[in-house]
Image (tube, rainbow, N blue to C red; front, side):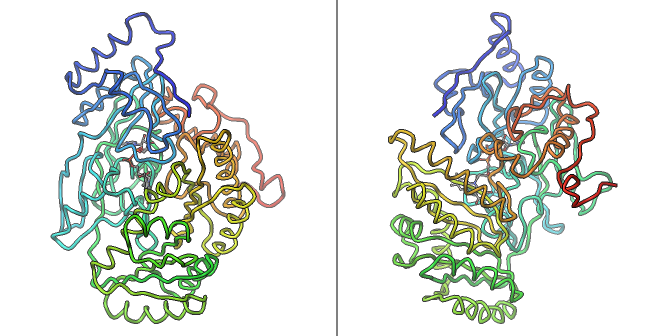
Length: 498
Ligand SMILES: Cc1cc2nc3c(=O)[nH]c(=O)nc-3n(C[C@H](O)[C@H](O)[C@H](O)COP(=O)(O)OP(=O)(O)OC[C@H]3O[C@@H](n4cnc5c(N)ncnc54)[C@H](O)[C@@H]3O)c2cc1C
């Protein structure tokens, strides 16, 4: 574990006290956390292996307060880290030792519910599940549903472009965010997009969704909500071999059926989940595939036999369809509690997040099994199979010297396999602090420089969530006009640039 204390290197004596005083003029005394023991609560996100205490934590209540705090940071050159609920798994909300954390927890109001236009406008600290709660009575819901949805915030979802079990059919966060209000790192406030579906000019909304807090602080979000489907049917199929569950996923989509969600769990996860929440999963199965179909009743009735046929064709030895809403919720409760339930099997585990083309599921799962045997560490697999978004859970014992490092190495090798098979180093947990070293597996220097140009256009001083995402420190001073370098595809004679 790495723990660092806050720093005020190079600042005159008394600067920290004075700066804290300026913050409390903007936010009031109860809007700033100074006490060392209270700052501990903010020293990490859900990736708890890295901890840094910030100088202060501030809790603004309005866009104007966020703007004034960022203006002050800009004038004094103080870095800042936005924070929602701190459930991120890539160290995105990890503080910087010379800066402050800006918690959006108090900006948690639902500002507008506009049913005729199917829109909801919220502040960033609103939790994901509260959006659905606000519109449920009207027959609507908010589709992206990360497993952490009870606590994670819409601001965090926007920054990470979060996904969830129902994103296969309905799309991830970016497909549901229509407009934003953002405070830029110099304190300026911009609005992007809006309630209507298309806006002229650059798609700045699309740029900010998934930018991991590097372009400013999101203070207002316009979301699309969708009508609850007429019918929902959920089943799980049990298999001896996880490879068969994986092959069923592309088998189902190849038959023209796009379920609302398809999730796989391996035997290790099934057993721990069953012990924890008694979801009714068969504990002796090698793996299970959860499939949810939704839509008009006639469509779901027509699709169900196709799904069953594919599952049987891939050696499913049990298929159980939820009899009612209660049983359906139980099936999903099992899946959504898979990460915490793993705590029963192993005190320490590392959650990896990678993506592969779903047609490669069977092959990649086999490779993960080989790596697990090679390293002598168990790997639990629970994942959004329809999107090819893997979440291997690498189990280890932190008390055994060197095992944490070994687990990280194994998790890194899994990402290598994902990229080799045409996938990505992250599906939904973001790059943050943890994965920046893997970015060069996917991007060359030209690609990274281009991303940095965008960052510099928003944040020339590099104050917004510094040290995240980019593998090597890139400042905006050296950015300027870059000498042209050939792209690797050009060098290999496989492409031309016009
Ligand atoms: C048990 C568990 C299950 C999970 N399941 C899923 C899942 O199914 N799908 C999924 O996608 N993720 C999942 N996650 C990861 C995490 O919940 C998501 O990434 C979530 O979106 C983070 O939201 P948060 O409010 O906790 O953000 P934080 O962790 O506080 O912050 C995440 C990032 O967003 C930035 N940020 C936060 N608020 C703002 C803002 N207002 N403006 C600009 N930047 C901001 C932060 O700086 C940081 O970089 C899971 C995590 C856990 C612990």
